Amino acid sequence: MAEKINYAPGLTLSISVSDLDRGIAWYEDVLDFKLQYRMDHLGWCELESSVKDVNVGLSAREEPNPGGAVPTFGVQDIEAAKAWLESKDVRIDGDVIQIEEMVRLLTFFDPDDNALMFFQMLQSDG
Image 1 (cartoon, rainbow, N blue to C red):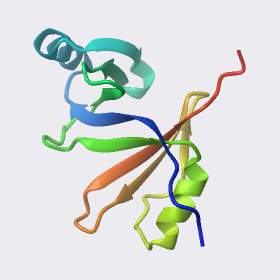
Image 2 (image 1 turned 180 degrees about the vertical axis):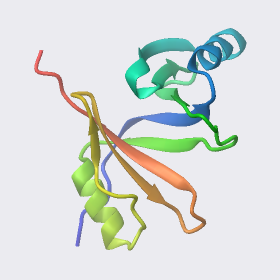
Image 3 (image 1 turned 90 degrees about the vertical axis):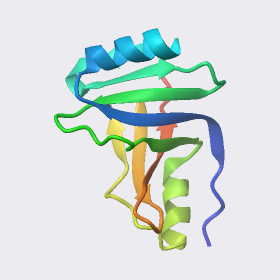
């Protein structure tokens, strides 16, 4: 049997927006979040909230899904976490994906079809 999930510190909530510039401005101005980074080619950015280890990721979409925040939990080993989910017959949305040399992601669903994700940060060689 697979081992239980070994969580890493942190939580990122992914929220879809129709305009990344407007979204960033709103979260900075209204909620006083701080932009950590922006990846225009992916239509993605992350902002640091005032809650320790909790970030908000904004994802540019032509048709945003209001109320569609996706809790994205950090894990130490995403392959082990995937094996655990599979051992519990959890529906998984495809394979683990990797974004550049930054992060690995896995989307899965609860029994009511609510999407959740795991992320594993990749270590830089520097």
